[in-house]
Length: 120
Image (cartoon, rainbow, N blue to C red; front, side):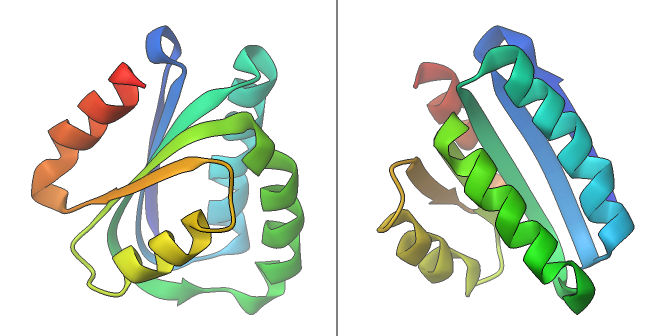
């Protein structure tokens, strides 16, 4: 999988992009800097850009769930950006049970997602 991230301290926003199948190594490459960003800022905003998704390594499922449980209370706002049709309903369902303010955007609305997070 191709992954990349950038931290924006001024707005306490952590952006990451995923494309392909997520491996345990990919998860570690993103989760470690994200966790450090949370430790530095406590409450953060998250921007997830999903260009293409082909699943994940099942061996990392439990690891991911435990990580999410620890991390979610620190995320005040989350923007999920993707043109994959099934992402939006899944995101909205997750948002219904989370205290995090969650919005979905199409890939062409990436700047709008960034603006929404910056204004939050």
